[in-house]
Image 1 (tube, rainbow, N blue to C red):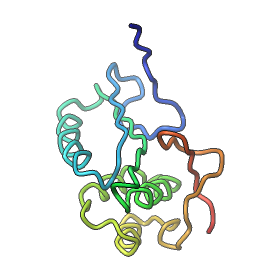
Image 2 (image 1 turned 90 degrees about the horizontal axis):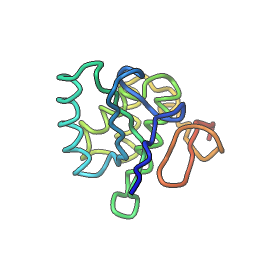
Image 3 (image 1 turned 180 degrees about the vertical axis):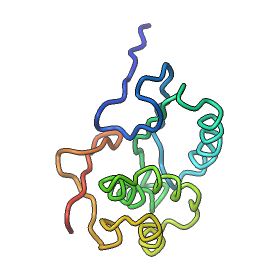
Length: 142
């Protein structure tokens, strides 16, 4: 069996050095309790490893199980369009129990994400960040 290495590209959210020897790619859902547990562990790895490890986040909202996952992912993308993806990423995982629309608007205000706070939404545009498995998202006016 041959394993092909999946590399991060310009559509991915990457935290850490792009030249690191180790890249961890997470397919995550902001409402998933297991992803929430992994978030804490990955923060510890990040603190210990520094620039030796790069972290990549790819959205994998399990909407049938987690009704707020897709909207949370879109809020993260909207924040990312303003250079605040990782701030929103952390806020969403740290407040995983509160991901309804009102809460997301509150987090957007806390992270200064005017795209979300002004009720702009992210929707498929054919370009933008990677959503697994099949859709692509970019920020667009509602």
